[in-house]
Length: 355
Image (cartoon, rainbow, N blue to C red; front, side):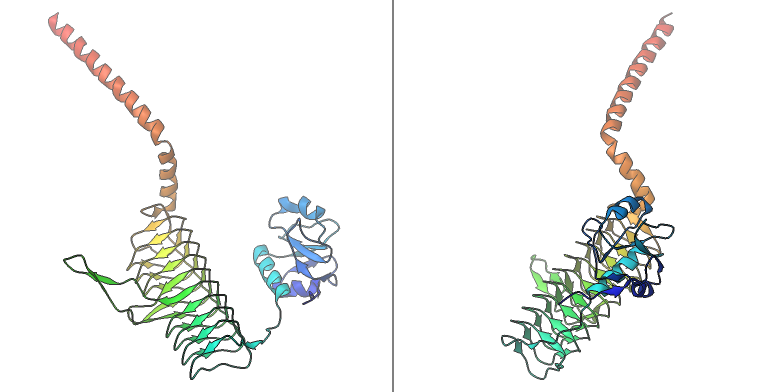
């Protein structure tokens, strides 16, 4: 499909930005500062990048307040990074193409499938599945019995959604994501045998959620594992049974959350952070990469390290940790000097007594 050109002034209206230059300049795409061509718009997030923007072949540039680029039309946006993301998405957006159901797809009984649908090759859909309008199921997607998916959601190749799970509107599930696999629940007897605890709950994913490739979200033992509206989850994240993730939270790659833990709104967990089970992380908690969170966290807490402690203390401790070999060497030197001083003092005391 040919790119659509949009007047610069229209893009400014989209993101509540101001135009410095020609509002009728036609823009067909957004590109990186070194890759942009005439007819495209690029961006900078800092005025120190102005020289690079001036040298770019782009016809226009998105800039932060107080910054202009000589001989280029500019969009001045307060939240520059947000404006870039919104404009880029707008320029890439294309109308939904309803391709129907591929001949190799397998559809179960009593399913609700609208006309505005795109179901790719080798898709497997169980019984009593409900699909919304303009849903896109790419190759190899598996939907088990009783799954429901809201309007305008996209499931990329080989996504699996387990029985009874619900997916909201405008949700994106990337390749290989597994929603609704059994939670990890076993009871061990005195002989060391592990007896499976049935996992009979579901997973609920609300609107506007995006889940990365090969991420796994376990179904609840009872009730529902719940991913609330606007949550963004990176690749290779593991979410245990009965976990609740609050609105607008962000989980970066390889985060692991054990069962029955609840996250409040707008929690941010850095890459490889681990959270123990049955905890509560209040609104706005932030954890640095590789944090090990073992206790409840108060609203707005910023933590790091394993076990996780307040970030400022963790950073100070990290600085000390790097100096431990040097400090150990110094300690040994001081200990030797003390022993030598004690020996000298003892000899001196003995000499005084002998006199």
